[in-house]
Image 1 (cartoon, rainbow, N blue to C red):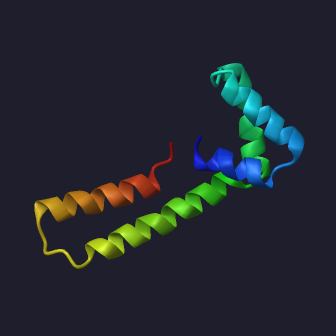
Image 2 (cartoon, rainbow, N blue to C red; image 1 turned 90 degrees about the vertical axis):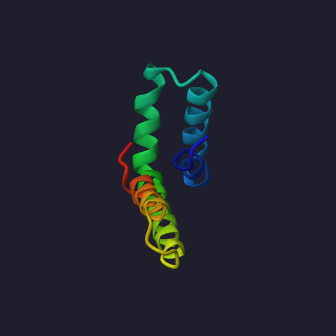
Image 3 (cartoon, helix red, strand yellow; image 1 turned 90 degrees about the horizontal axis):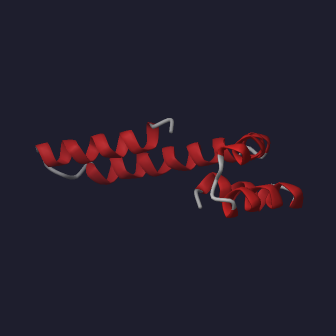
Length: 88
């Protein structure tokens, strides 16, 4: 389960939780996806997950700040920013 789904389950109403559970238990069939996306948007779960990812990305970048410059450090920096900025 991903963070947006966990957040929607935590802050959504019982009917939203039932919809999410049915979609997950049904194997995530595309027909189940539209109502789940609506719930994720209505509960703010997508924005919440984006904000958490951005926070963690900033922490990762800060942790890398003490490393000496190298191709390996640069790769880690790119990975941290990519993971936080991706839109999928």
